[in-house]
Structures are given as C-alpha cells and as structure tokens.
Length: 234
Image (cartoon, rainbow, N blue to C red):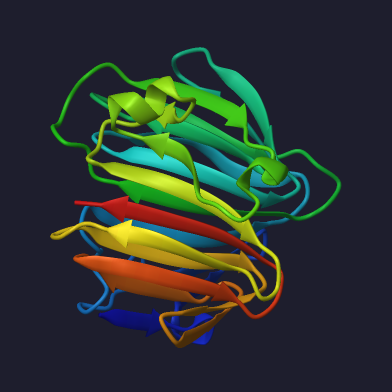
C-alpha cells in the first residue's frame, strides 16, 4: 500500500527566517491522520535563511537525524559538541535523558535540510551526537544506510541511532530502477529530495512523501535524475 503526500498538502509554517513544511503533525500543524508512520514521528522540510537558525532548546527521548540538502548547518550542544554538517552529509543526535542544542545556518546562502525524528527503542540513556559525510557517488543506483539501529549496519559505517530503524539514501539516473525489500510489519517513508520517481506506479515529484506498508518489494524508477531519502522503521 502506498499513501502519497504531495508537497502542497504538507503542513506549512513561515517564520521569516524559517520556511518549514511538515510531513507529520508538528508544532501548530495538527492533522490526526498524520501523527507518524511506525516509529517515525517527524519529517520536516526546512529552509533556513542565511545567518539565522534555531537557538538553544531542549530535547529528550528522541533520535534526531539531519540530512542537509543545500548549504550547511552548524551544531552546538550542552555536551560540548560543535560541528558543521554540509550538503550531502548527515548528523545524528540521540537526545536520551536530555540535551540542549542549537542549529545555526552561518552560511551566506539559504540552507535546506530534512529533519527526521524517530522514537527510540527505550527511553533514557546518555545523550550523544555524531556526523559524517556520505558521498553521493557511493549511493549511485543503490540505497546506502546513513543511520541505523542495527549493529551490522553501524559496523559497516552507518551513524548509530537507538531505534529499530534505518535511514537510507540513494541517487538514480533517469530511467534507472531500484528495488527495496520492505519486511512484513515494517513501515517506510520515502521522499525524493530532488528529481521525480515512480514508486510501484505512483508518481512522486521532489519533496513529495510516500508512506509505504511492509510485506513486499518496492520498485522505484526515476523519471528524472533523483536523490532519495527513506526511513524504514518498525
């Protein structure tokens, strides 16, 4: 089963410095039909103006993954971590028992990113943060696991999260296809960051979302060169 969520149908909040689209209920946007998908609770499509950003604020008991699409984001947190994550790179913060962090766009251009929140397998634990590059060339024609709660995928280079979930990225040339086996009882949420694809015959353009139900093989075919991000969760 595929439920398409067009970009135009998403929740919208324009704060001037932040222009945000919400795939799921978030802040002042509430839709009882869009409260999450499996363990996935938030997928925000954010445009952050130059020299602005999110001032320090708290989180707890959430896995927060930031996928930068354009520009860069600079992270600071109460654990003493600082870091700049540029386009194509990924950062992960496990909020655990509690952490304060800030995310600033210190660049001279707008930064665009996906911010993804996934519920952890269990509450608590010490907070942590990490980031790394994932070259798009390595994702050509295949999904690469960017963040994962599974030990073998972490050992293979994925950033660790404390959830029964994985975040994947892929790039496809126009006309290429990619199959993904989504296990029984699993939930996937797919968003083309750029380009256009067909997912089992359902057309998605850039920044549309698709909620997918497990138990079958998904075929993704690019109608245009495309960059894909997907969450596979319990």
